Amino acid sequence: MVPDRAVMASERDVALDIRIQGVSKSFGSVAALAGVSLTIRPGEFVAIIGPSGCGKTTLLKIVAGLVAPDAGTVAIGGTRVTGPGPDRAVVFQDFALMPWATVLRNVAFGLELRGVGRRQREEVARRIIARVGLAGFEHHYPHQLSGGMQQRVGVARALAVNPKVLLMDEPFASVDEQTRRLLQDDLLDLWAEERKTIVLVTHSMDEAVYLSDRVVVLSPRPARVVGEIQVDLPRPRSSKTTRTSAAFAGLVEDLWGMLKEMQ
Amino acid sequence: MRRIPSWHAVWGLRAAALILLFWLWERAGRQPGAYGIPAASATAAAFWQLLTSGALIAAVGTSARSFVLGFGPAVLVGIPVGLLMAFVPPLGRMARVYLDVAMAVPMAAVVPLVILTLGINVAAVALVVFVFSMPFVASNTYGGVREVSPRLIEMALAFDARRRHILFKILLPGAMPMILAGIRYGLARAFVGLVVAELLLAPFGLGELIADARSTFDFDRMFASVLALLLAAVVVISGVQRLEGRLLHWRQ
Image 1 (cartoon, chains in turn orange, purple):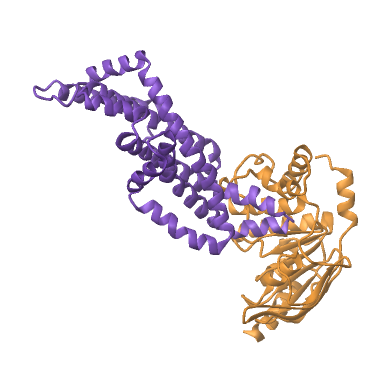
Image 2: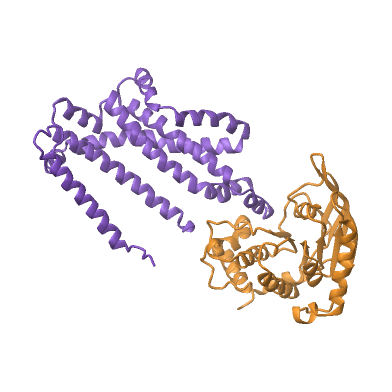
């Protein structure tokens, strides 16, 4: 694989910080978020966890610019978020692949929307497809792929637009346990290469601790930040060394302690 | 273990069924007293005569013109109407009732009204074809767009899609299976409209050919004309099925 130098360089250099300040959001009479504040450093991998239905996904959508907050602001790299932007890309829980488009076209879709020419966008897409381990499946349709492969397409589509911030909404919740572990390790590899800022919404304590630098805990609805855990496990991490360590077990237990109080 | 029949076997069976049908038809036509049932061979001879005399081609041409003039606009109007209904929900809820009624009522009842308004001419036939088929195209387009997963729209928005992107890259391709199904239903209905109009009220084209033969008790010719109409419908509908297969190959 010949890396495109210009793209690789910019991928390495730039990661952006995220500043979420006093963000509140209600849907009708239901308050989802009540004054959430959170600062994420450039290149940091932050996991957001909380009881189900607590508004984690709403918070992610606000950062993505898909939902406007009722109060408060989000700024990415110092620029206030007023809508979706090329600095961010989202990976969806249900993959959200276009069933009528091939893997190649799905992965190139973000670039297609930006008006990048066919040749160029397919070249980028092919490279990223190879990187997520789907070389040879360029012309397959989503229904011909397993759930894990479909989510690789979802990740590849997000990476293809070369975002500074990767927003992941329970990306591995819809795949089986074995596949999930493979995808988690692949994500760690990708992140080690590129050091994008990653916000991962998850309901898995194991996943949050295994992947992130810091786990942020939200309260039940309306969500506020009630605590966080620094995950200072050494990197590179692997199941064999990380998951078996006492420190890992301790952190998961700490996290459970915080979540249990809210049940 | 069941074997999937091969392409050859399927076509062999189809041909066998057709030969059987023609054999039974021939036998029925040769029964003494089967005055109104011309034998298959007599029908074929009449068909050949219609074909060589040019009468059939002229009739098909006239019918095809009415058909295209009616069904073309049905598609060109039906799809935008369905899209508009999907984009403006109050309009959709309001108009849907009328589409449902238009699809449920015996449309043949409006034929006299159309003839009364436009007179006995090709435009009247085309209008009947239009009112028979348009509601199906519009209704399926509306349903198809509404069934596109909102998650895909959200995905496109997250990648900074513009409105036209959402329309042309998500909603239309997402609704395409239902739009094409609507075109297929509409096509079948358009043939009904064509026959009803030409046969009963405005004798043009194939309808005229059939009515002429009937009025002179030339049953060979009448059967041959009916056969021509059926063939035309089969050709057009299988054409649309092929188009569906091509456009929707991603679903296999």
